[in-house]
Length: 502
Image 1 (cartoon, rainbow, N blue to C red):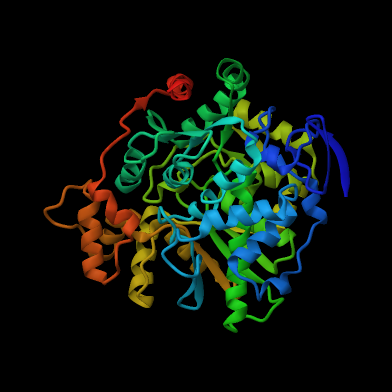
Image 2 (cartoon, helix red, strand yellow; image 1 turned 120 degrees about the horizontal axis):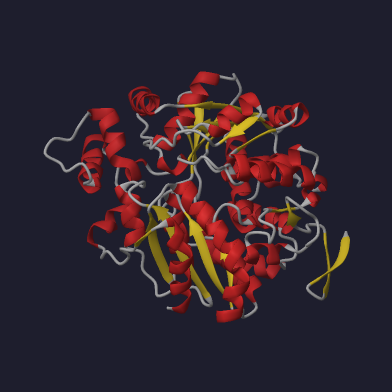
């Protein structure tokens, strides 16, 4: 147990959070969640997780919600049990299409962890249904503006989660014309008096860099002028990361319960990822005691993470590829910074140096020792656009399973590596969110249809396969376009400030 003073108050708990780049500003999880990003540009981490553990065997008989309570009780231990119970109830009750929030189903000799049954049909719901509840219990009357960059799915999930939240506004930036038409409609039709959306003339990395710049340059000024604090709902927020730990444990539990594995057997998880947050949650689960053999990174053609694990060199100086898996079209994987912290033996100075190199040169190289530590945990692979299409077709032909292009990257990498161990592929989005690409991979071009008509492809895909379109997507057909703003990169701060004044 650690005792320290934070913001003038004495606190006692294990999970003290600090920046990946220094240990000067210790705080509890509530403060870390409200701030989102550290003042020095680093991400909040806790050394305490290295000494934490959970009785995983005991979790095999618990519900999803009970597992949440156990995990949060360790990683967010300045929340009371009553506060966590409130958050869990508000986050998940009545918001999912399936009784099991994240069902595990078979796909050939492997398994899919279906993470797309929430209100926006994407895995981000698992965390973004929870984050507003955690923030609301941490606020204490303070007013907050959430600033978020999205490559597609985070935006709508955040807008949905924070809609009309008391004392919280949200502003979402997404890359102009670089999200799917369905993702665009999900954001452009978002309702709520506290929500704001703008397309940015650039790619996702431009959006993400712009948001970080606003935090670095405008936080104090905005608080002084408007009495509003800035925070983030991106995967860099601890309140986004911790909820994702739970479904790794839940997947393992389901396999144990059905007799597919025996408790203690180590399994692989294949994770389609661009920003590294989803797979980092698997590493946290492993630290807490989950029997994980390998966490396998599945990249698309923007394979900066795969190249990094193979070479030890992280280099964003490369062409940006627009792929059919746009949520992974990322060249700056923000959450990797947290993993570098742990892989380097919690060396803040070392991480700060790497991030300085990345900022100034667009690349860095880790030491052989750090690379060895990473390879002990992670394996990797990637899928091209064509390989993703082939994977979609193969999954349907062999197993009658519809998968989206992101999941297809995981499917292809799992097939390629073929480790021989029981393998769970994280299925991160409904195939109907990317209906055009899925349909064309299976059946070819839909004649007489406008290329951008996602609804025609959704309907055709449903008719051809007999699978129902999720209601959350079906309802977009009749919703009003409410958000039409398009801004240049250097105007993002100006737009954010206008939203705060609104």
